[in-house]
Amino acid sequence: MSLYQLQKLLYQLNRDPALQADFITDATAVADRYELTDEERRAVLEPDIGLLYVLGVNGQILMHFAAFMRIEWADYLQRMRDGVRQHGPIRAGVYAMTTGYDDKVAGV
Image (cartoon, rainbow, N blue to C red):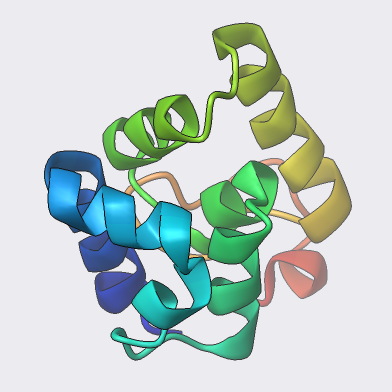
């Protein structure tokens, strides 16, 4: 997984109006500038907030990306909850879930 590249894309997208304009015009071309896995690329382009959360994207970065994508706060929170239900525990990053899951399910 290329969590660094994924977070770099979202971080830069959150702060650069020119990149935001490019993303609105051609999100695929913007995503192609970063070394993302197919799963990460799909999560950004859909956008799948729940999957991005499970992949380990930092909440501060993800929160701003969700706002950029015009996702309301309550919906953002629900999408993160749904992401864990659908995709399993958070896989990487500071929010990685280490309790409450069977070791085989968590991949330990």
